[in-house]
Image (cartoon, rainbow, N blue to C red; front, side, top):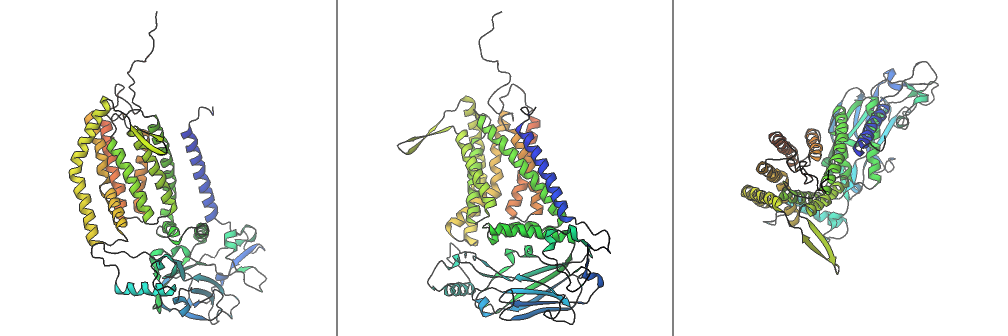
Length: 547
């Protein structure tokens, strides 16, 4: 029984178990067992149930424990935990902070009429208002040579002086202090009764009990939302930054959402401990911050199915090309284009210092596309004296006819494609700014891939039209990739991405629909050559049986 089970069935089974297990874990995160008997000894009652008058005080300090002094920057005398608000305050930066130092925010929630240091029932948290990050490399106009504005030039000189070497040209390689222009925090507004025996560990470290009280009462659950600190909101700090604006945002939060946020925040922190940079973590933060919980749940299921179809498409694509002996009906130009475009996108992601989570799969995909080119062009590599030599295989008559159609399609396509790509590259060179000539070249190529890449899918459509057949295409891999294409359409609305990449998701839909139309128009029969170069109506070779 187990020997007959296909590998695909095993993978789908593992995927179903993974999804069900994840749903169970998520349920355990958002659900907390309440205390059954409010008057029992095991119940922990909320301090907010007595409707106390509260005050919010926020201070800044150079150290988390406020040693060396602190400064009050905002105060809410009549603080209601159920009322959402957003305030913008100007914060004076100490000299140490301006000289590549740090600054902390001390958030206190205490009883009105008391200072935070007098109230025994105070809750407080510390949030870092600065972070260290390598500044973005300045971009220049490659034609005129203009690089920066006068203000940016002064900042660059100050950064060089700050590192003790005014003549140094690599000061931008050092991390410098950046201002987090947004401070977001929450308090659980639910009057939830905790059971001491079933108290979740994630809540336990945020729980503070009222001292000197016989009955267990917990103080308000205060939480600083670190996920809302995005790279796009960071402002570089320099010696002239005397004051910087800070947006203070508050909102109440449910207990289930708080627990989910704690787990996600811990996950991002763990990634940073493993060497992920602020920019790498920011890409993950964007998934949680820029979408609500319903879209987040949808994103999880979409991503899970995307992973499954990616694996199945990869498996069938490799199997197809591994067994393929003939290029009849296959566009060699399309294979070459996919290889070229994949390598260009990989180099672009590398130039943009993209996260390794994206860069490594792109690199693996580039290697696979190079292998496909080797199979398509029948290239054999032999080493002689440490030098490689390449031998190209010969094409049969059917493959030569396919190559003629392929070349004819590319001839018509070049009349449209080359002027568009060259025009776009010249426009970018004149009107846009880049870090270097290499950066301009890679950006121009990747924009051509995104904007006009679907045109290179057309030669395969033209070959199908000339041969009046689609039997040579790897339809299993196509179907899995098609499912991923429609999943990418969902991601295009959920996840923040460049407009060119979003349009690239929808352009693939159009090409795939044309492929489906051709499959309906040219139904497969057994006299046509299939994807493995075999016709099912061929008579089996062998000795004739003598009666």
